[in-house]
Image (tube, rainbow over all chains, first blue to last red; front, side, top):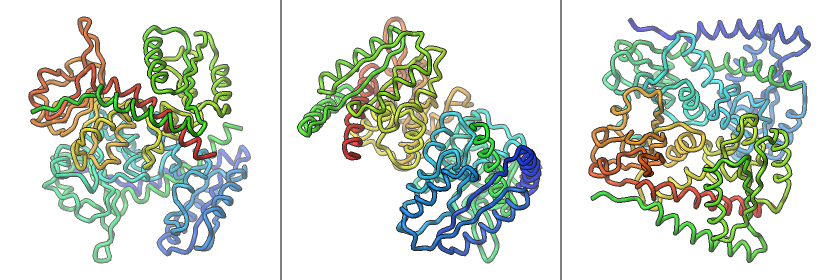
Length: 283
Length: 283
């Protein structure tokens, strides 16, 4: 029997846990606060930011939205972030991607103080992930780990395949699966004969953005499938995994939607609480 | 025919390149300078440090040795490193491992200013490696890449297996093989059925420290073997790969000694020149 990995259910549990933690923090006079920066008015970003705002409000996290014009210069944005770094009332800083062309994303990642880096994109935090300190990590990575923990999926010594090598998911996730003693393979668009690799995998995480990339004939019996892909096909949202086809062969599989997706916002807000605690302990 | 990957020959070429670059820097009034810190008197470290000193002298790099007593406190060592960070005449700082028990290695790695971090162990620099900036990296990783480049080994889409997950070799090397479009697998002591994985690999890098770990029956025809292991067996130095047995099956193989080993010191001194240039450009 295949287990459907219910990210939505877990997201609700995480939400309830955050609520309790926020109450505790507030009892100690601390209001966890995230500042979200949007540049321009990308409609997809606006929808996503509204979701974050609603989630923050529902758990008692204070959310401050700053919106700048599409024409802001890199230096202006950097100066604004430096102000937020210095503001003790702000625990977490998030800059919504994509940014306009005149701004170098990497320069922005590196401007956010590492201890306020809620997205976990700062090279210092990414380096720490590879050196055994897992406090600060990208939200999607935290969500995947929470799902793995929640269903007690065994990673030790397992052949784990990550398809996709982004700084946001694939690479930092590799660090964490390795830290949990999985054997980790990172595949990507240049990989030759993906199917030969998927057939050997005990656990596959796909973050490509290509519907039907993974089909059952590429899999071994009993594989665990964690699908990060979000693709729109004929008005429906689907993942990278051909769900109906693959669920027959898998021992566990995430649905799309309702798998990793709902965990991302929940995990981001969990990270706000973690950052707040780190800063409180440092005082 | 198997190609023997002659690290020693390449190390001499790198040495000559460094010499020229040091002359250029000196013509511009800059003397590339490394400060090497030893704590205590570990005999193996002393031998290794003498090698570094000799290499530095032979290429015109100024080497300053500082030796502290085994009893130095962590704070004393940190204060000393901070002095060196602030000293514009020092371009590179190296702390020889191992350190005595009272000192947390990680705290020391993080004290060295990233732009003087000649070993590339600072989390900021390790994070940068995963984000596409390959200027500063551990010496062994640089040595392996130089060997790959020198022999024009093709990595794109190849199944590359790294055995060993240290912060010094395996993990940062994974970042660089991935950046060169290899499909990368990281295996380690918890990996189940290593042999099944080695058989699929086009390129294997072993950094375990176990003689005869890799034998020919674990390999596919034409594999490239890069052996970082250094093991003493009956008074002889050997690698992780059973050389005579495996060279029949491999298309290319490093000898031990004379493969990766000689490249490490050369690559460290290459890194001193790189750091010096970065600091000079920043002025």
